[in-house]
Amino acid sequence: MSQMLDRLLQEKVVAIFRYIEDQYADQAAQALLDGGISMMEITMNTEGATGMISRWREKFGEQASIGAGTVLDLDMAKEAVAAGSQFIISPNLDESVVAYGYENGVPVWPGCMTPTEIVRAWKAGAEAVKVFPMGTLGWKYLAEIRAPLDKIPMMGTGGVDLDNIADYFRAGACAVGMGSKLVNLDWVRSGRFDLLTERARKFAEAAKSV
Image (cartoon, rainbow, N blue to C red; front, side, top):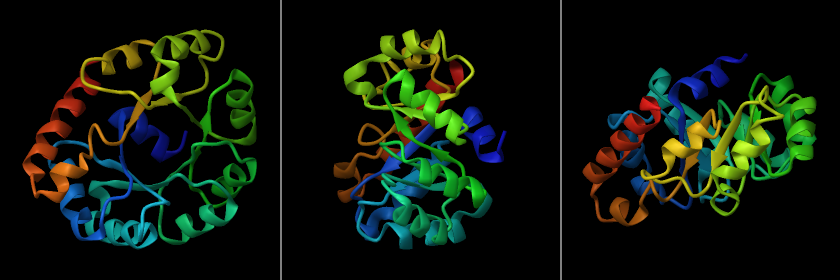
């Protein structure tokens, strides 16, 4: 088990930063850290994503684990690793990305929906998979596929909120990925970083208490 997977299983929540403007990014990340969430993914379709990844690696050091999200292909994976990503998350399964991550000591957690994709990802070397889109599939779907595939760690992404986060973990998720419910860009843009910290604390506590 990689150190990063170990951290994922321990922390249980990955904050997804998508489309955040560079000027607010550092304060937003600090606000989540203050609330107890230390695993953060910056999606590659965010302007300046690689610059933010490099900067956060330097700025937060061991305090945080910084990864790249929405890594669709090998070229993006190479950019993400060059920027210092500690993990890679995709909405899709591309075996070449999994292999590249493995060769470079950077775990890749690809997006999968079907049992076939999940097993393919596992056989390609993915230590964990992201079951996506959970907002549409629902946590009951996760519970069903976990029964035969219980050896493969699965992160649920999509549709997670305070009132259902416990259901995701009871269904067998090892962690959850959270975007706008956690990184509320309206709060960010209006400077309400205190609200971000408070929200982060609630989710961190809810995840740890299951």
